[in-house]
Image 1: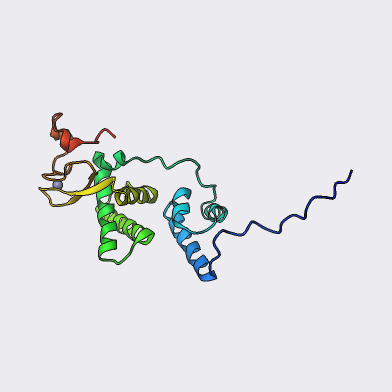
Image 2 (image 1 turned 60 degrees about the vertical axis):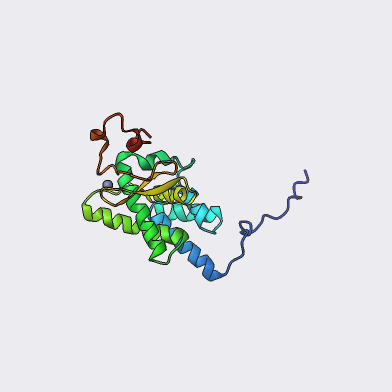
Length: 195
Ligand SMILES: [Zn+2]
């Protein structure tokens, strides 16, 4: 009955892999809070914030009152080129690129600023924001990895999200040529609409 051989319990969680300064730690915590406030999923936080997963989960629980949802991010590139979401995706991507080009921001900072700008624009029109922050972040990832790009509509001169393999020359957006009027034969303009 010698039950006294167990080592003394450790006094806390294991040391995080990255030793950072207090200021960096505070900055990363603020970033996480900002992202959680906009509705970011845990996978997004893990990709962008250099804090241990356990701390991100604790932060999420404290701020939202519930555990973060489990499972993979469900989005594919097709969603962003379907009729209604495409207008929103295009607004977001234009805002993101504006923040990079003229705002001097990059990475997650450009995504956050672009997302806020998108929400303000949508708010002015009185519509609801179709893109959650996590969807917006996913869209930027697809764009940065070359899977989605912007094409300029030859009618309204606006820039719209299209698949990387879609024809960009002579492109007509769905606001100028909505699917209902486009007819069955217009495959090119409707590519991906079934997504
Ligand atoms: Zn157009």
